[in-house]
Amino acid sequence: MSEPLEEYNPTQYYTQEQLDYLSNRQSQLGYERVTQILEEWEQLRTQLRADLEQGLAPSDERVRPLATKLVALKAELVGDPAEFREDFAVIQEKSLQDLLAIDPAEGKLLAYTNQAMEAASK
Image (cartoon, rainbow, N blue to C red):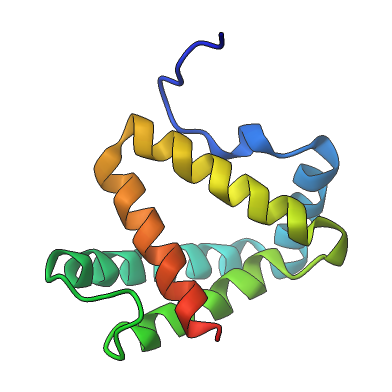
C-alpha cells in the first residue's frame, strides 16, 4: 500500500517526455506570456470560487464566460498535443482525486473548474 500524499505536486503524474513537451511549450510562449497566463488563470479561479460559493452550477450561463476564457488559456499554455491528449485526461483525473484527499476545498474548486471548462467546450 502506498503512503498517502502529504502535498499536491501535479508534475508527479507526467512522464519525462511530457514534462519536456510542457517545458518546450513554455519556452515557445516566453516567460512574460506564461506569467500573464498564470496570473489570468488565478484571477479567473478567484471568480470561479465566488461562483461556487454562491451555488452556481458549473454550466450556468454566468459561469460560461469565465470557463471559456480558461479553456482558451489552457489551450495556449499546454497546446493540444494529440499524442498526449488521453494521457492528460487521465492525469487530470488522478491529480483531482489526490487534491481532494489533501485539500478538499481546493479539490472541490478544481472539480468545479474542470466541470465548467467541460460545459463551456460543448
